[in-house]
Amino acid sequence: MFLDRPDDIERTQRAVDAYYHKHGPCCAGCDHWGFFNSVVGECTRTAPVSGEERMKMLGMRSLSQPAEPGHIVTRRDHVCGEFVDTHDWEGS
Image 1: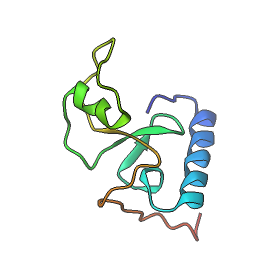
Image 2: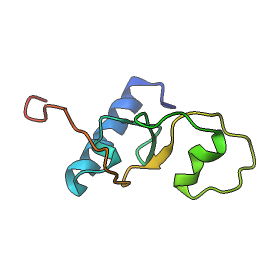
Image 3: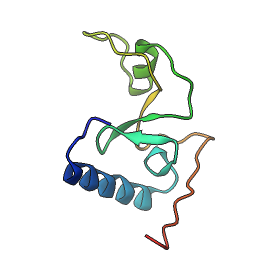
Image 4: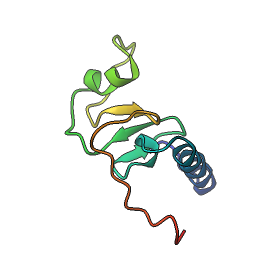
């Protein structure tokens, strides 16, 4: 996660949750997705890949700086067959 101030993290989490509640199952509401900001995050369900492969889901094909290897990066609206939401929304 790129955010480091607690108020930024909480504000971003509220924005991600609101998006999920409005649009239904997508990366924004998935237990496997960790946000970098309110629009983009990484899917920890996937195996780590090269830096170039990480960015392809965002449509990036040529990077001006090398990206570090890690999990696939997706937009919050991405939908795949691995969606899981175990959060107790009634109790929060």
